[in-house]
Structure formats: structure tokens, C-alpha cells
Image (cartoon, rainbow, N blue to C red; front, side, top):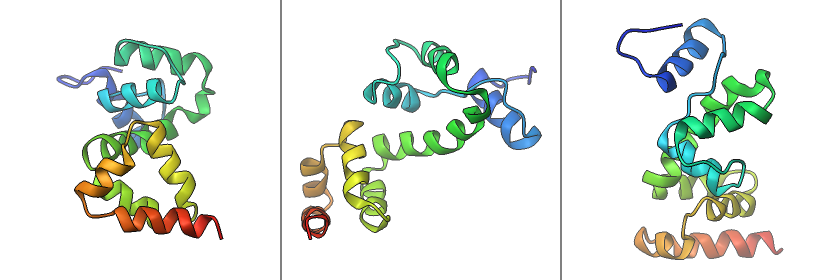
Length: 129
């Protein structure tokens, strides 16, 4: 499918949302960094990341990758206060904080920056009970 003025990433996302069809994974810069941090791929460009993901991820999961990971990638790299607060209130905060650490969020630095140091400590202390 071709959409005038729309690049491949957005075309894959539009295709999924509008037509409920997935012929590819829309990988942006955030997802590219994220999947390399998680060691799911070893790539130098978003296009290489897309190709590697599509090489091992079952096709029926491609649309879900777009919906879940685009926002997570953006928040974990650009909206750290927002994603940290989400981690505190989720059902598994320690695991959520661990995932954020895996993708490069410096909990100590960001906690201090946003005044969330006590919240981070509470999450870890609650998990040890």
C-alpha cells in the first residue's frame, strides 16, 4: 500500500488502525533504541530493526507491537516523569521499574530530577514485604 506523503512507519500504523491489517511493523527512532536496549535486535537503523523484528516475531503480533511499544518508547525516552508515575501505580511496580532500567532510564537521576526518590524507595520497599 502507498499513501502519498506518508513514510513506511506511519503507513504501517495507519494500515493497522484503519484497515485492521498488518503488513509490517512501524519502527520509529524510539522503538529502534528500545529494541536494541532490550537486545531483541542488533541494528543500526530503524529499518534494520523492523526487518529483524519481522524476522522472528509472529506476524499476528505485528500490529500489537506498534500499539504497545511506540508509546512506551516515546515515554521512556522523552516523558520520564510520566512513565515513572505509571510504574508506581501499576500492578507490578518493581518489574516496571526494572524494565525502565533495562531501556536506559536512570532511576536515581530521574527520581531526583522529578522529586520521586521517595516513591522509588517505597516501590522497592513494598516489593520486599
